[in-house]
Image (cartoon, rainbow, N blue to C red; front, side):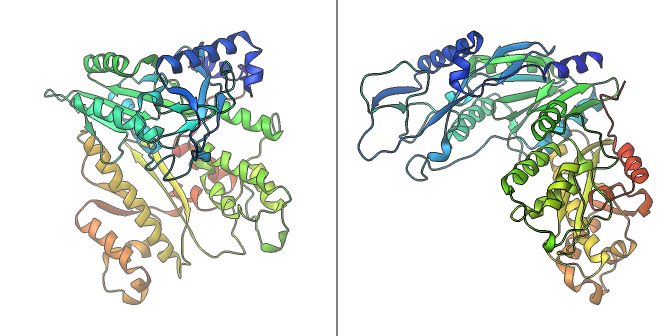
Amino acid sequence: MEEEITFTATLDKEQVPTSIAEALKDPKWRRAVEEEICALKKNATWTVTDLPQGKTVVRCKWIFPVKYNSNGSIQRYKARLVARGFTQTYGIDFTETFAPVAKLYTVRVLLSLVVNCDWQLHQLDVKNAFLNGKLEEEVYMKLPPGLKSVEGSNKVCKLNKSLYGLKQSPRAWFERFTKVILKNSYKQSLADHTLFIKVTSTNKKAILIVYVDDIILTGDDEEEISNLKKLLNIEFETKDLGKLRYFLGMEVARSKERPVINQRKYVLDLLKETGFLGCKPTDTPMEANLRFNKEDGSLEDREKFQRLVGKLIYLSLTRPNIAFPINVISQHMTNPTEKHMAAANRILNWAGDLTEKRSTSGYYTFVWGNLTTWRSKKQSVVSRSSAEAEFRALVLGICEGIWLLKLLKELDTNQEDHFEVLCDNQSAIQIAKNPVQHDRTKHVEIDRHFIADQVNKKTATLSYIPSEGQIADILTKALPKPIFNKFLFKLGLYNVYPPS
């Protein structure tokens, strides 16, 4: 575990340029820019030409990510030229779009599978992934900053290959990637189209999941995984980053018992940006019994609040303990108040909102004892009773369970074809099993039929759990510190970096 902490500590040190002018002053970043331009030219990404009359031009910019080795050392400084796709016009510069983005729920299910099967996690980085896609549309781009000047004031780049930032680039890249993978006897998941699985006649598995240009490999067929790495390197030029350590801003550490996902660097950057680095932490992410109303007054800097909430939403990918408070304050994005900002700064709040009477649905799912998915969502209509509100929450949870069963079946895990749902409302369970209670069910008839159908097919089993043991309450209400901490322990959440 010390090795993992050392790795994540290195993520805080490196500062990246904020502009091309700043990058060109630093030798290592200037080399990165020159390497990127050489790669683009070698790939024949564009042809410098005059802008035809009546054609629009797309702007571009540079970004500067740092790539890391599996031991935490810096693998390379990467300069990437990206098109400003938001300046494209639908029907002229692009038609169809698609982003090959893996569901993070699927990634967490894979992590649970890896733990229970004692598999290794491998990570690959595809160099200039989007340059592998062929453009079908005619797209012109301004000359990139840093490119040696070309005579003629109206010169532009006519793009021959897709480029990061173009709206159609992800689609073009993923189409070619999918053809290569399917050609090599992999099957594409229906539960998540970015997941590919290959099962041999001896029941050995190789599993691949892709998130844009980041690839995760796992399974017990090490020979196939090795062959797949070679194939991908030939087809797309990849970099083997070794064991999975850092993925989408999330650090993956592995103890003897389990892999641990955290966003330590993301949190530190967020605290530094908001001026809260070094502040004394609060006992809970929200103040109990906090109330909002429309008379609290407007917040002057609404965009600041919106940016903060957006970043906190991303933080909830690994922090289910703040999912409910984020759900609440995100409902006030259009007209936030100082009180909302204070609640967001607390990370975060919970409201028995005076301006809203709709209930909140919340659920957790566990696969082989490991927490994999969760959700906190405000219900779209006002419930007439707690049983009715619970019913709507049950539908969400059962739908999630059905999706997980589908995914696990595709992964060929020998998983049982049913799951258990723990509910702390006995009335809701009775309604699900008793079709005669017309007055109590007429407002949720469709939901009741759906739940009853899954119960009758033995896909889902409804079981009662006392409220004091219902950990999903952390997603639907503010809890006192003792109960809050008890539920965190049951969820398997703990501090990877406890104070020394």
